[in-house]
Image 1: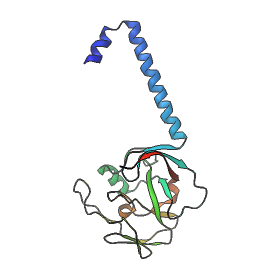
Image 2: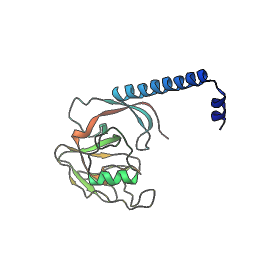
Image 3: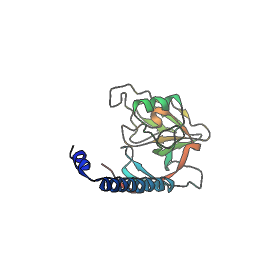
Image 4: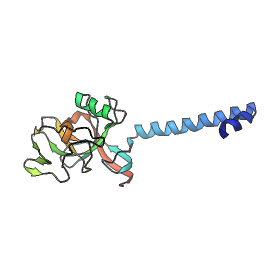
Length: 188
């Protein structure tokens, strides 16, 4: 209310200057955001990895287990449901969602078993217990397990509530944007 009253009392020239200043500020901010996106910077607002500013680095070798990557999920029924449930945010990926930051824990040819937790080639994966329900009490369906297909990766986050391959299964390596490197982050 105060802003409206003070603007109403401004003269025509002052209003024009205020509008011009707001447009310049919005342009500078928008340009900065565009430059950051083009430069490979992303802001992570999910607890799957530390919150903050990250950078995407080109992956100039085959992906391997242990790589922390940015990946665009494909447009599949499972991912559409995840978007509807609010697990995925809007973003720049072809499917209309933001890239995920996840650790590659299995590559093509490795065997994934899903039980109370995840095992890769018979070895239990730490911090991989599954949840039966999400934060809103909706049932969570786990991936059935099996051999990771060619040109695919199985992804994980040690955050218990993470939406990762425990639920959606392997993703195609073609969706990998690059390695994820923290720039200015905070782990709550």
